[in-house]
Structure formats: C-alpha cells, structure tokens
Amino acid sequence: MEGGGSVSWVKYGPVVSLFVVLLAVWFRSPDDAVPDGRLDTVLSSLLRAEGKVGVNDVAKPKVAIGFGGCVDLIVDGVMLLNKIGLTPIDQPLHHNYIENKVQLAESFAYFFAPGAAAERFMLNDTLFRELVEASRDLPGNRWAVGGNAPVMANRMASEGCNILLGGSFSPDFTDILSQHITVAGNIIEEPDIHLILEYPSGASWGQYTSRRANRYIVHSDDHNPYLDSMAEFAEKLKDFEPDLLVVGGLQMMDNFPFQAGERDALLSRLSGLMASSSPSIGVHFEMASFVEESIMEDLLHYVIPHADSLGMNEQELPNLLSLLKGSNITVLSDPNPRVATVLDQMREVYRIVNQRSKDGSEESDTYGAKAKPLTRLHVHTLAFQAMIVTRGSQWKNTMSATAKASLTANRHVCGSDAIDPSKARLIMDDSFSISRQEGSQRIPLQESKPVSCWDEEDYEICVAPVLVCTEVYQTAGGGDNISAAGLVLQI
View 1 (cartoon, helix red, strand yellow):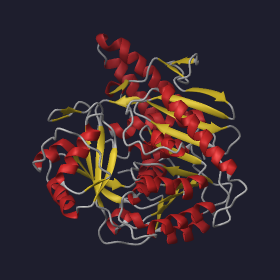
View 2 (spheres, rainbow, N blue to C red):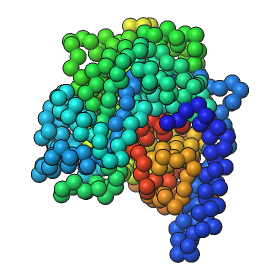
View 3 (spheres, rainbow, N blue to C red):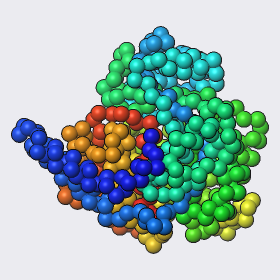
View 4 (cartoon, rainbow, N blue to C red):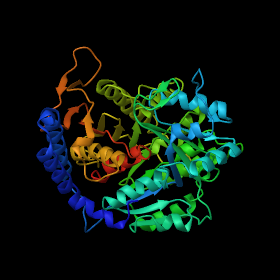
C-alpha cells in the first residue's frame, strides 16, 4: 500500500533508482555489458527528464477524483481456473457479460492468448462467490485497494498532491488510504470485491499461451455503478477548490442491469458536475474497458464533451475512435501496436473530438455549459507512452510528464519504486515513424535523450519508451497509476 510516508519518494526516488543503476553496472557480468549498458543510459536519461520538474511541497496541488472503489483480490488466473476445474475450450469467444462457466472459459481464452486486458460484469452472483471462495486460499493471492479512483488517488497522494476522493468505503478501507486523501461518500459495511486474474507473459492454459503479461477482471458489483458518493462529492468540491478534477470508474455501469432511465439520470448528473467546474480547472476522464455500445454513446454525449484531458490504453483508443467515426465497438485490438499506428489514431481522436466541440460551440447542454476543447490526450501502451498536448493550454511539462509516466509503468508492474534495469527490457523499436503515411519522418530512439517531442499543427507530441518489467508483480491498476503520475507534473 502507498501510505502518507511514501510522499518522500518525490524527493528521493530518482536518487534511489540511479543508485540501483550504478550497482547493476558494477556487478554485471561482461557478457551482459552491451545490452544492459543501453538500458542503464535510457533509465538514467528518463530519470533526469522526470527530475527536471517537481511537485510544489508548500502549495500542494489539489486534485478531486471520483468515483467508487473496491477491494481487489489478485490471483494467478490459470491457477484459479484449474482449481475450479474449468478446462480450456476449443473456440475462444467474446461475451459482453458472464453468466456461466462456459462463457467464462470462452471469454478468458479470447483475451488470454493475445495478452489483452479485459473487465467483465458477472451476472451470475453464485458463480462469482464460488470464484472468490476458491481464490481465498490460492497460493500467492493478495488483497489490495482497487477501483480507478482510489488507485489514482493513492498514486497522486504519494506524488505530493492533496486529494478529495469520491467513493463509499468501509472504515477498514478508508484507514489504509494515504493521510493526504479526504473521502467524500457514504460508509458501508463490506466493500465490493473485484477478482483480478493475473497471468505472466508465456503462461499456458491448455493449448493457449499468453503473448504478454496482463489481467482479466470479473466482478459482480451492485454498488459502484450507482455513483452514490456523487452528491457528497459535489458538495465538498465547492470548498476544496481543486486544481484538477478526475473522473473514472464508469466502466462499472457497462452491462449493469439498470432500470429504464437510471443510467441516463446518473450520467446527466455527472455531466452537470463536470460542466459546473471552473473553466480554469482541468478535467480529466480516464477511459476503461467498455464493451456496451450504448454506454460508449452516452459517454460521447454526457462525459467527453466536458473533459479537456483523456487517458486510455492501446485497447481503449481504437475503441473510442471507432465510435467517434460512427462504427461499432472494437472488442479486441493489437495489444502491441506500433508507434505510428497509435499516433495516427490519437491525431484522429484529437481532431474529431475538437471538431465536435467546435460544431457544438453555439449550443449549451441542460446545465447551460458548452463543450470543452480537448487539449490533452495520453495513451499508455506496454512499449511506450504517448501524449498530445495543445500548445498554450494549461497543461505544462509535457516532456517530463511523459518520462514520469514511462517510469511509473515499470515501478508499478515490478512493485518497486527503485527501478532495476536487470529486471527490464526495451521492446519499442530502435526508430519509429511518426505516421503510417508514406514518406513520414522516422525518429531514432536516442538512449541519452529517450523522450522525443515535436510540434504539429496546434499541438506538441511526446513519445517515451517504457522499460518493460520482466519480473511482473502486478499489472492491474497499471493504467491508473501511469495516468495519475503523468497528470501530477502537468497541473
């Protein structure tokens, strides 16, 4: 857990990581000198880039983050499926939600082989309880604070921010949050449990082998979809006066069996909350795994127009783009996309969202608020981090923020603030095209200056390689930690 004492990492973390680099160089065998030397240089260069700016310790940034939260029960996914006697099926199949063991096997296999992250609602509460009970005595299982909002809150608190967190939690849950987090929400007796089926790269389940480490999440959460902390959060928001408002956790609504009109009413209230924030406050929306087309359309109507910053992974980016272009949901995309592909998709999202904002500039929503232009877009992938930031916007320190996001990817997945280059590798290409268009510029990866930034149109683009962790501790929560860390240096 990241408690209040971990804030000192802001000051001393880069020094510790540089010390680890020096130790790795000193004790390395001659046979490893060439490849590891490159990693050492990239790491030390990323640490320097991250350290160019810091968080104000006197006037700490104030960040309001909603909504919800849970307790994650993290287990070895293959071990759990084997324990309950779930054998691999011949044909992987996508399901929007899970009702029985056959669908669980089909859905898990669908995402396990390519190594793509997924999260599904389990309608069968009896089956979910069976899975949880079977997980309780699995070797190596762990309990952790879960949910987009609490995970982002803990990361930003550990990086030096004061946090207002919207969520309804049990007293035990609240007690283990950072001392720099104030909770706005109801007290509940028992937190919801989300089951995290983790697996490493190269894991096998019958005839299937995972191409990369990732997780498959199932939950039967009947509490968080209702955003029941929103009223108290909105009330405390007035006096808190945040520098940044972050919205996440809305995937809990995906395929949840609401009564007619319930979800619309909740999202309309959320839209009003976002729209009522001061124009000088940045509003960030963190995407997640959505598979229900109607909720994606709701997000395009109620949420995205009031956010000027978006964060997402390599699966969520093409999904959002597909909807913006009027096509269907893309359930599974390349889990290891090329830089050029991601940048082209980011440019399209940036262009389309801002065109929609401009087209609707003369119109106001129910609350009299106009759509905000999109001025920041952060995409996190296994191999690299990429950001688009509008020149002249309130978002600052893009190069350092991209470097910090990259380093946080390793810190979280390896489970250590001190980065050990002997437990990392680079999988980003030695050079990359900035677009898939013929004749596009290629940018080489320079070990001494690994964050590449350049200007286009009205925005700046920055790309940084990730030192991919080779001894995985946990992938769940990676995107939330990465996005939160990137935001810290830009507010």
